Amino acid sequence: MPEQRDGLRRPIVVATTLPFFARAATIVDETWHELDRMAGALDQRVGQLSADSAERAVLELATSGIRELARRLEQVEVALSAYLPAPYAGPTPAEMPARWSEQSTGDRQ
Image 1 (cartoon, helix red, strand yellow):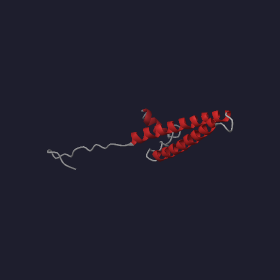
Image 2: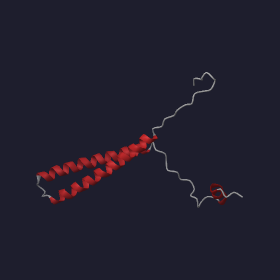
Image 3: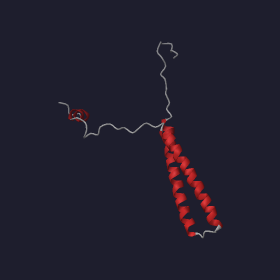
Image 4: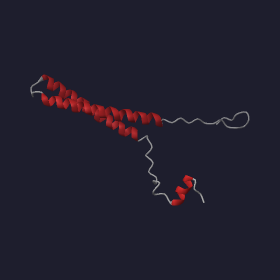
């Protein structure tokens, strides 16, 4: 790392992609749920049409395409979640020893 004239090192700025992956995972999650709802609505409409209807064939094709896209987005969501930190699974306040809770509330003796 290059030193400044006074002999001190320059601070390093570290950028993280965590916000990007978190937002991308959220968008993918919302999108595939919306697509699944759309396919469900189309399925209901298909059920109301006669078996030999051209409209039914088009809706069935659209529904299967939407479901396939939703399935792929779900896979993308799983891949993106690999880049996100796991939720904190530490002790709850009730599980902490009494001395920890006293220290955290400032009630030291």
